[in-house]
Image (cartoon, rainbow, N blue to C red; front, side, top):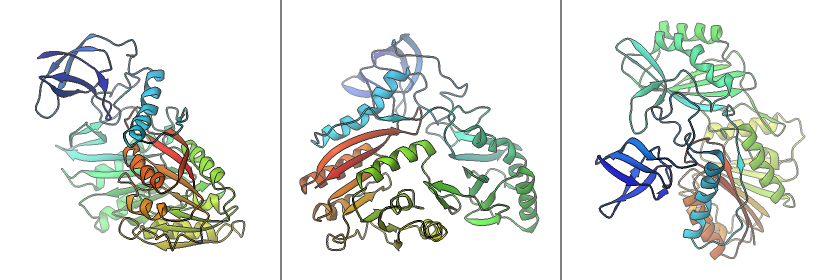
Length: 408
């Protein structure tokens, strides 16, 4: 065991000390604390806090430190929020970007509508919750202050079905979305349903009042078509679809994007997903939505067609933008662009945008490091970063979204 002093918080929310000239990451510690630590080649273990930080508080969940979902419940709100904004500020500084970073938007507890649970039956016992940090062990949860009450209720509703249909010792990921019509459940795993288990699953879906149940992307039963509202446009996402985790965060980010692109009469929405931004932008502009997921594009297109003529034209294109970005020439018709890529960012697309004449760009990202890299490319191409706004919809985790607004 070793006594260390925590010098800072790392990007993953772990305290960082220095031992023998090398950084040591200690989970569940805060800046300035003195701690007794057991050294481990893979992950050090906190034994005891000897001198606590004034920012240390009691966690709100009994599963904190065991469940791998949250990393920072022990940090006071003010310090936590400043650290989240700091993640974005540090990423920008490392790329030499001098841009105004706004105060940020922060979600409240019990607001998350989408979660990926893990279920596994071991020794005849179902464990249904989240994985332990850096482990495949499933932590059975009795509470979760992050999820909406309706989403947390999925655990009790699904447990009887999972016990009946899951094979033993096979981990299954159940992505659950709280939609307007009820819970949309999509299970992915190395198993299939025979006729008997499919009947059990269908009966359990009706009994639990689910809107839809899918297994390995195949719909088992859909008593009600599950939908989400993108600013007045109603969309039925495909099973397991990506959606912003917190509806209020989605609305806030959409307001930033649509406000920035309000004067553009023709807009490209790149990495469009199911239409989070495209369908809102279509109230005032024609929109070309580009996405590599065929199911998401189909949902977006149907949402537009079902709008009853209240939206301007939305066209769609299936395309892998990492491998084949829209070129500067293809971008000529567009006055505005929004892009919302995965964590790897949009480097190839940013390079084409940097050569384009697009006047206004909104960049949405869940990774400050790749966002800063992409912004540096755009700045080098002649764009000015008007503002960057952190958005925290992943409460008590080290993840933070950001919306950057740029003008040429």
